[in-house]
Length: 165
Figure (tube, one colour):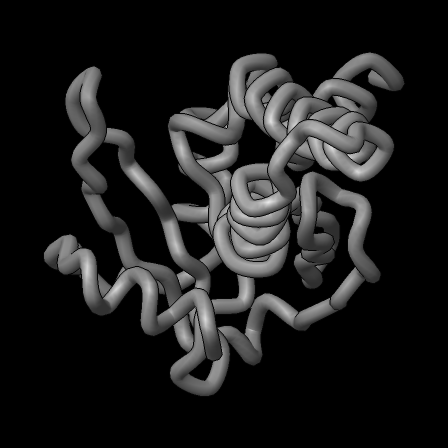
């Protein structure tokens, strides 16, 4: 009996895939290292490292804030933390949520499915096939607990507008 409870709890937490974490760490460390090297070099230009640093900051403040969420669903609540789980926990009651929608986002290797959980017309949480290795398990939990609002058509402009809300 104790094993069943433990397994249920484990299945209700997102687990990040390795690739997004590696990409995040590589880009962040590389840009900081490049910035450091150019600051300490009398011959290196500063424009490219500053541009790369701005790019990394942009991703941390937009893409990782709006899509790299750590999510836990337990009892009658959902706990959401942004920035790969490094952000502050936000707790919402499942019964108060508006619902969730599904989006297929194109990539070089095909399409990734994203689920956006909505509260008062705003996206409060996201899980995806790209960021989460247990996406299918979490999707089934979400489908049982939260109202399905339908599919959303991918629009590049709309996606980036959402990032700045």
